[in-house]
Image 1 (cartoon, rainbow, N blue to C red):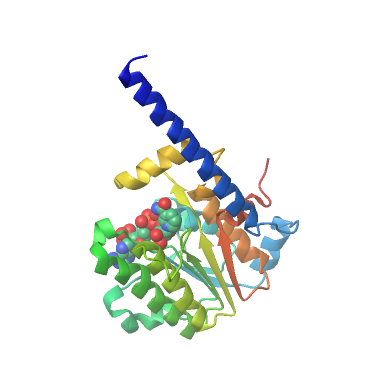
Image 2: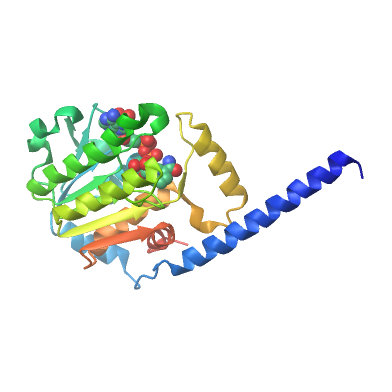
Length: 274
Ligand SMILES: NC(=O)c1ccc[n+]([C@@H]2O[C@H](COP(=O)([O-])OP(=O)(O)OC[C@H]3O[C@@H](n4cnc5c(N)ncnc54)[C@H](OP(=O)(O)O)[C@@H]3O)[C@@H](O)[C@H]2O)c1
Protein backbone atom coordinates (compact mmCIF):
# COMPACT_ATOMS: atom_id res chain seq x y z
CA UNK A 1 0.00 0.00 0.00
CA UNK A 2 1.51 3.39 -0.94
CA UNK A 3 1.49 6.52 1.24
CA UNK A 4 -1.53 8.00 -0.60
CA UNK A 5 -3.64 4.85 -0.09
CA UNK A 6 -2.72 4.65 3.56
CA UNK A 7 -3.63 8.35 4.15
CA UNK A 8 -6.90 7.87 2.32
CA UNK A 9 -7.89 4.85 4.39
CA UNK A 10 -6.95 6.72 7.59
CA UNK A 11 -9.13 9.71 6.57
CA UNK A 12 -11.94 7.34 5.61
CA UNK A 13 -11.63 5.54 8.95
CA UNK A 14 -11.72 8.79 10.89
CA UNK A 15 -14.73 9.98 8.89
CA UNK A 16 -16.57 6.73 9.62
CA UNK A 17 -15.85 7.06 13.35
CA UNK A 18 -17.00 10.71 13.25
CA UNK A 19 -20.29 9.81 11.52
CA UNK A 20 -20.85 6.91 13.93
CA UNK A 21 -20.32 9.25 16.90
CA UNK A 22 -22.68 11.82 15.39
CA UNK A 23 -25.23 9.06 14.87
CA UNK A 24 -25.03 8.03 18.54
CA UNK A 25 -25.40 11.64 19.71
CA UNK A 26 -28.35 12.35 17.42
CA UNK A 27 -29.97 9.00 18.16
CA UNK A 28 -29.86 9.96 21.85
CA UNK A 29 -31.16 13.49 21.15
CA UNK A 30 -33.90 12.22 18.91
CA UNK A 31 -35.14 9.72 21.44
CA UNK A 32 -35.15 12.38 24.13
CA UNK A 33 -37.57 14.45 22.05
CA UNK A 34 -41.20 13.92 22.90
CA UNK A 35 -42.73 12.91 19.60
CA UNK A 36 -45.72 10.71 20.31
CA UNK A 37 -49.20 11.77 19.25
CA UNK A 38 -52.60 10.23 19.93
CA UNK A 39 -54.44 8.49 17.09
CA UNK A 40 -56.41 11.05 15.13
CA UNK A 41 -59.10 10.97 12.47
CA UNK A 42 -57.76 13.78 10.34
CA UNK A 43 -60.78 13.96 8.03
CA UNK A 44 -63.10 14.37 11.01
CA UNK A 45 -60.82 16.98 12.55
CA UNK A 46 -60.75 18.90 9.26
CA UNK A 47 -64.53 18.79 8.98
CA UNK A 48 -64.93 19.99 12.54
CA UNK A 49 -62.38 22.77 11.97
CA UNK A 50 -64.11 23.98 8.78
CA UNK A 51 -67.36 24.47 10.68
CA UNK A 52 -65.63 27.11 12.79
CA UNK A 53 -65.11 29.43 9.81
CA UNK A 54 -61.63 30.41 10.89
CA UNK A 55 -59.31 32.70 8.97
CA UNK A 56 -55.52 32.68 8.63
CA UNK A 57 -52.59 34.64 7.29
CA UNK A 58 -49.26 33.35 5.99
CA UNK A 59 -45.98 35.25 6.12
CA UNK A 60 -43.36 33.97 3.69
CA UNK A 61 -45.78 32.25 1.29
CA UNK A 62 -43.35 32.88 -1.58
CA UNK A 63 -40.62 30.88 0.18
CA UNK A 64 -39.99 27.16 -0.04
CA UNK A 65 -41.90 26.10 3.10
CA UNK A 66 -44.52 28.82 2.69
CA UNK A 67 -45.40 27.70 -0.85
CA UNK A 68 -46.03 24.12 0.21
CA UNK A 69 -47.93 25.21 3.32
CA UNK A 70 -50.15 27.48 1.24
CA UNK A 71 -50.94 24.67 -1.19
CA UNK A 72 -51.84 22.28 1.67
CA UNK A 73 -54.12 24.92 3.17
CA UNK A 74 -55.98 25.89 0.00
CA UNK A 75 -56.36 22.29 -1.15
CA UNK A 76 -57.91 21.28 2.14
CA UNK A 77 -60.21 24.36 2.22
CA UNK A 78 -59.99 24.49 5.99
CA UNK A 79 -60.15 28.29 6.34
CA UNK A 80 -62.91 30.65 5.25
CA UNK A 81 -60.30 33.26 4.34
CA UNK A 82 -56.56 32.98 3.62
CA UNK A 83 -54.44 36.13 3.51
CA UNK A 84 -50.88 36.28 2.27
CA UNK A 85 -48.81 39.03 3.84
CA UNK A 86 -45.59 39.76 1.98
CA UNK A 87 -43.39 42.36 0.37
CA UNK A 88 -44.65 41.61 -3.14
CA UNK A 89 -47.78 40.38 -4.86
CA UNK A 90 -47.62 36.76 -5.98
CA UNK A 91 -49.12 35.42 -9.21
CA UNK A 92 -50.91 32.09 -9.29
CA UNK A 93 -52.26 30.26 -12.31
CA UNK A 94 -54.08 27.39 -10.65
CA UNK A 95 -57.73 28.00 -9.77
CA UNK A 96 -57.25 26.67 -6.23
CA UNK A 97 -55.62 30.01 -5.36
CA UNK A 98 -58.37 32.24 -6.73
CA UNK A 99 -59.89 33.31 -3.40
CA UNK A 100 -56.68 34.38 -1.73
CA UNK A 101 -56.36 37.85 -0.25
CA UNK A 102 -52.96 39.46 -0.70
CA UNK A 103 -51.61 42.26 1.48
CA UNK A 104 -48.42 43.86 0.23
CA UNK A 105 -46.58 45.54 3.09
CA UNK A 106 -43.36 47.42 3.75
CA UNK A 107 -41.73 45.43 6.53
CA UNK A 108 -39.65 48.47 7.53
CA UNK A 109 -42.88 50.30 8.41
CA UNK A 110 -45.01 47.40 9.57
CA UNK A 111 -46.87 49.42 12.20
CA UNK A 112 -48.51 51.28 9.29
CA UNK A 113 -49.98 47.99 8.10
CA UNK A 114 -51.69 46.86 11.29
CA UNK A 115 -54.97 46.47 9.35
CA UNK A 116 -53.41 43.72 7.20
CA UNK A 117 -53.02 41.55 10.30
CA UNK A 118 -56.46 42.18 11.75
CA UNK A 119 -59.16 39.55 11.95
CA UNK A 120 -57.12 36.37 11.52
CA UNK A 121 -57.53 33.49 13.96
CA UNK A 122 -54.39 31.66 12.93
CA UNK A 123 -51.00 33.00 11.78
CA UNK A 124 -48.18 31.09 10.09
CA UNK A 125 -44.70 32.53 9.86
CA UNK A 126 -42.23 30.99 7.39
CA UNK A 127 -40.28 34.20 6.91
CA UNK A 128 -36.51 34.20 6.89
CA UNK A 129 -33.32 35.11 5.13
CA UNK A 130 -29.64 34.22 5.48
CA UNK A 131 -26.59 36.09 6.65
CA UNK A 132 -25.01 35.42 3.26
CA UNK A 133 -27.89 37.17 1.54
CA UNK A 134 -28.70 40.00 3.93
CA UNK A 135 -25.57 40.46 6.08
CA UNK A 136 -25.62 40.20 9.88
CA UNK A 137 -27.87 43.22 10.49
CA UNK A 138 -30.21 42.34 7.65
CA UNK A 139 -30.53 38.78 8.91
CA UNK A 140 -31.48 39.95 12.43
CA UNK A 141 -33.86 42.51 10.94
CA UNK A 142 -35.79 39.87 9.01
CA UNK A 143 -35.54 36.79 11.23
CA UNK A 144 -36.07 38.66 14.48
CA UNK A 145 -37.47 42.17 14.04
CA UNK A 146 -39.90 41.58 11.16
CA UNK A 147 -41.07 38.30 12.68
CA UNK A 148 -41.60 39.75 16.16
CA UNK A 149 -43.38 42.88 14.88
CA UNK A 150 -45.65 40.72 12.73
CA UNK A 151 -46.47 38.56 15.75
CA UNK A 152 -47.27 41.69 17.81
CA UNK A 153 -49.63 43.00 15.13
CA UNK A 154 -51.21 39.58 14.75
CA UNK A 155 -51.84 39.35 18.48
CA UNK A 156 -53.32 42.86 18.56
CA UNK A 157 -55.47 41.91 15.56
CA UNK A 158 -57.03 38.91 17.34
CA UNK A 159 -54.83 35.99 16.30
CA UNK A 160 -55.10 33.16 18.83
CA UNK A 161 -52.77 30.52 17.37
CA UNK A 162 -49.37 31.58 16.06
CA UNK A 163 -47.11 29.08 14.24
CA UNK A 164 -43.42 29.91 13.92
CA UNK A 165 -41.01 28.03 11.68
CA UNK A 166 -37.80 28.31 13.67
CA UNK A 167 -34.81 25.97 13.48
CA UNK A 168 -33.23 22.95 15.10
CA UNK A 169 -30.85 24.16 17.82
CA UNK A 170 -32.52 27.56 18.29
CA UNK A 171 -31.23 28.96 21.55
CA UNK A 172 -31.10 32.57 22.67
CA UNK A 173 -27.91 31.84 24.64
CA UNK A 174 -26.09 30.37 21.63
CA UNK A 175 -22.92 32.02 20.42
CA UNK A 176 -23.95 31.34 16.81
CA UNK A 177 -25.82 34.25 15.25
CA UNK A 178 -28.34 32.05 13.44
CA UNK A 179 -29.31 29.91 16.45
CA UNK A 180 -29.24 32.86 18.83
CA UNK A 181 -31.52 34.96 16.62
CA UNK A 182 -33.95 32.09 16.19
CA UNK A 183 -33.96 31.40 19.95
CA UNK A 184 -34.41 35.08 20.77
CA UNK A 185 -37.39 35.54 18.48
CA UNK A 186 -38.98 32.33 19.82
CA UNK A 187 -38.67 33.69 23.37
CA UNK A 188 -39.83 37.21 22.54
CA UNK A 189 -42.96 35.92 20.83
CA UNK A 190 -43.74 33.71 23.81
CA UNK A 191 -43.87 36.88 25.92
CA UNK A 192 -46.77 38.13 23.79
CA UNK A 193 -48.99 35.45 25.34
CA UNK A 194 -50.82 33.91 22.40
CA UNK A 195 -53.56 31.49 23.45
CA UNK A 196 -51.59 28.90 21.52
CA UNK A 197 -48.05 29.20 20.19
CA UNK A 198 -46.42 26.42 18.15
CA UNK A 199 -42.71 26.54 17.47
CA UNK A 200 -41.33 24.20 14.79
CA UNK A 201 -37.63 23.41 14.88
CA UNK A 202 -36.81 21.50 11.70
CA UNK A 203 -33.34 20.29 10.83
CA UNK A 204 -31.93 20.95 7.39
CA UNK A 205 -34.84 21.40 4.98
CA UNK A 206 -34.76 18.89 2.14
CA UNK A 207 -35.93 20.84 -0.88
CA UNK A 208 -34.89 21.49 -4.47
CA UNK A 209 -34.38 25.20 -3.96
CA UNK A 210 -34.33 27.42 -7.04
CA UNK A 211 -32.01 29.90 -5.35
CA UNK A 212 -28.35 28.84 -5.03
CA UNK A 213 -27.29 28.16 -1.42
CA UNK A 214 -24.07 26.12 -1.58
CA UNK A 215 -23.80 25.40 2.17
CA UNK A 216 -27.40 24.17 2.34
CA UNK A 217 -26.88 22.13 -0.84
CA UNK A 218 -23.80 20.43 0.61
CA UNK A 219 -25.56 19.73 3.93
CA UNK A 220 -28.51 18.23 2.04
CA UNK A 221 -26.29 15.95 -0.06
CA UNK A 222 -24.43 14.75 3.04
CA UNK A 223 -27.59 14.23 5.08
CA UNK A 224 -29.39 12.43 2.25
CA UNK A 225 -26.44 10.02 2.05
CA UNK A 226 -26.49 9.29 5.80
CA UNK A 227 -30.19 9.90 6.46
CA UNK A 228 -30.77 6.41 7.88
CA UNK A 229 -28.07 7.05 10.51
CA UNK A 230 -28.94 10.68 11.21
CA UNK A 231 -32.72 10.97 10.74
CA UNK A 232 -32.98 13.79 13.28
CA UNK A 233 -30.85 16.12 11.19
CA UNK A 234 -33.04 16.79 8.16
CA UNK A 235 -36.65 16.80 7.02
CA UNK A 236 -38.52 17.15 3.72
CA UNK A 237 -40.15 20.53 3.39
CA UNK A 238 -43.49 18.85 2.67
CA UNK A 239 -43.37 17.23 6.13
CA UNK A 240 -42.92 20.60 7.84
CA UNK A 241 -45.85 22.14 5.96
CA UNK A 242 -48.08 19.13 6.59
CA UNK A 243 -47.22 19.05 10.30
CA UNK A 244 -48.24 22.71 10.59
CA UNK A 245 -51.63 21.92 9.07
CA UNK A 246 -52.22 18.76 11.14
CA UNK A 247 -51.28 20.68 14.26
CA UNK A 248 -53.78 23.41 13.36
CA UNK A 249 -56.58 20.89 12.93
CA UNK A 250 -55.68 19.01 16.06
CA UNK A 251 -56.13 22.09 18.27
CA UNK A 252 -53.94 20.71 21.08
CA UNK A 253 -54.18 22.27 24.48
CA UNK A 254 -50.60 23.29 25.23
CA UNK A 255 -50.19 27.06 25.36
CA UNK A 256 -46.63 26.95 24.04
CA UNK A 257 -45.24 23.90 22.33
CA UNK A 258 -41.86 23.24 20.76
CA UNK A 259 -41.83 20.63 18.01
CA UNK A 260 -38.39 19.26 17.31
CA UNK A 261 -37.49 17.55 14.04
CA UNK A 262 -38.82 14.12 14.99
CA UNK A 263 -42.07 15.48 16.40
CA UNK A 264 -42.63 17.45 13.19
CA UNK A 265 -42.01 14.32 11.14
CA UNK A 266 -44.33 12.16 13.26
CA UNK A 267 -47.09 14.76 13.19
CA UNK A 268 -46.81 15.05 9.41
CA UNK A 269 -47.48 11.31 9.05
CA UNK A 270 -50.84 11.42 10.84
CA UNK A 271 -53.72 10.60 8.53
CA UNK A 272 -51.42 10.06 5.56
CA UNK A 273 -52.59 7.51 2.99
CA UNK A 274 -50.15 4.57 2.88
N1 LIG B 1 -32.97 26.15 5.02
C1 LIG B 1 -32.99 25.29 6.02
O1 LIG B 1 -32.42 24.18 5.93
C2 LIG B 1 -33.72 25.64 7.29
C3 LIG B 1 -33.67 24.76 8.36
C4 LIG B 1 -34.39 25.04 9.51
C5 LIG B 1 -35.15 26.21 9.57
N2 LIG B 1 -35.17 27.08 8.53
C6 LIG B 1 -35.98 28.29 8.68
O2 LIG B 1 -37.26 28.04 8.09
C7 LIG B 1 -37.83 29.26 7.63
C8 LIG B 1 -38.32 29.07 6.20
O3 LIG B 1 -37.24 28.67 5.40
P1 LIG B 1 -37.44 28.53 3.82
O4 LIG B 1 -36.16 27.99 3.30
O5 LIG B 1 -38.71 27.84 3.53
O6 LIG B 1 -37.57 30.08 3.41
P2 LIG B 1 -37.20 30.78 2.03
O7 LIG B 1 -37.45 29.89 0.87
O8 LIG B 1 -35.83 31.38 2.16
O9 LIG B 1 -38.28 31.95 2.00
C9 LIG B 1 -38.18 33.03 2.87
C10 LIG B 1 -39.43 33.90 2.84
O10 LIG B 1 -39.12 35.09 3.58
C11 LIG B 1 -39.33 36.24 2.76
N3 LIG B 1 -38.29 37.24 2.97
C12 LIG B 1 -36.95 37.06 2.96
N4 LIG B 1 -36.33 38.24 3.13
C13 LIG B 1 -37.30 39.18 3.27
C14 LIG B 1 -37.29 40.60 3.48
N5 LIG B 1 -36.16 41.28 3.57
N6 LIG B 1 -38.48 41.23 3.56
C15 LIG B 1 -39.63 40.54 3.46
N7 LIG B 1 -39.72 39.21 3.25
C16 LIG B 1 -38.55 38.53 3.16
C17 LIG B 1 -39.22 35.73 1.32
O11 LIG B 1 -39.94 36.62 0.48
P3 LIG B 1 -39.48 36.90 -1.05
O12 LIG B 1 -39.95 35.71 -1.83
O13 LIG B 1 -40.16 38.14 -1.41
O14 LIG B 1 -37.98 37.00 -1.03
C18 LIG B 1 -39.84 34.34 1.44
O15 LIG B 1 -41.25 34.42 1.38
C19 LIG B 1 -36.74 30.31 7.78
O16 LIG B 1 -36.98 31.06 8.93
C20 LIG B 1 -35.46 29.50 7.93
O17 LIG B 1 -34.48 30.19 8.68
C21 LIG B 1 -34.50 26.80 7.38
